Image (tube, rainbow, N blue to C red; front, side, top):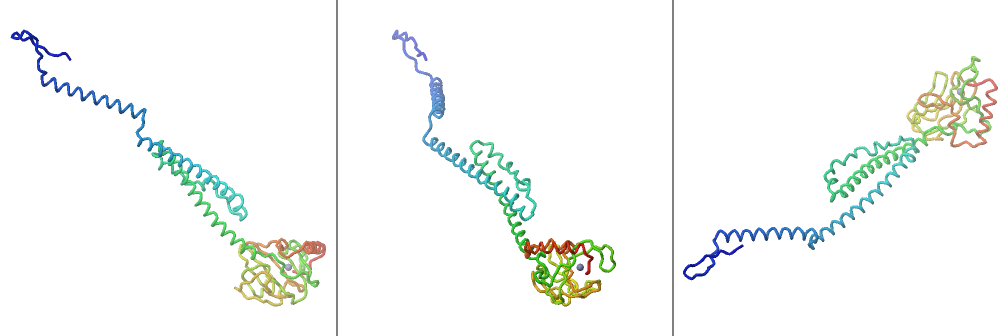
Length: 327
Ligand SMILES: [Zn+2]
């Protein structure tokens, strides 16, 4: 700024005029404004190209944190893969062994729409990884819950299966190794011993001496132990549960009572010739599933050798050619 001069006619010289107050204020204000602008530019430039030690530390810590989240996310992914493998095995192996329906993937992954609650975290680059890890963790927790429920169910199936193995009729009700015992009539259509017309025989007949022991073919509860006027004579009916029942007819003596629990192989009566439809001493044995009679030959699984099985088949073939003698 140019200096102000004035001509003094007395001294005949130019003299410097004093700077007016307004101008001084203006100059100071200008200097401050300039200093502020320059320092702002300096700070901006500095912070852009150089870091303060504190900023550098925060940045470093942030990078470490992101790395830790990456590591965590990878571990969660591995866990999720292992869990998926377990779920697959559960459906294809464990559940199928026990005839349980597989749990569909839609159920195993149901209610996993938790992404919404992490939307804000996902949108931020700083928290995105943490949000992803949290979402995956939620997913894993849900799958683990469903899986543990499935295992609880399987434990129940195992318990039922163990009980079922003992209950289902699977041994012969009479000792067929006894030379005096023989198969005398098979299950199915045959000429009626009384009326000589084709009738359906609902069980198997074993001929033998009166008093031969008769055993429970499976564990269960005695439903009937009485004299049956319909033709069965002295009869025992055992309820084995799981839809199975067995009937033992024409007994000479009953060794159990109604309501009694019996175990497989327990003596329940003696072979006899009671009941109007018996034409000679024999046991009439029936297996019922859901109240419908089924062929008992299919249930002799636990105590029969191949030799014995062939003997039965041979006897049944011979019997098929000859007219039936017993009911
Ligand atoms: Zn019969």
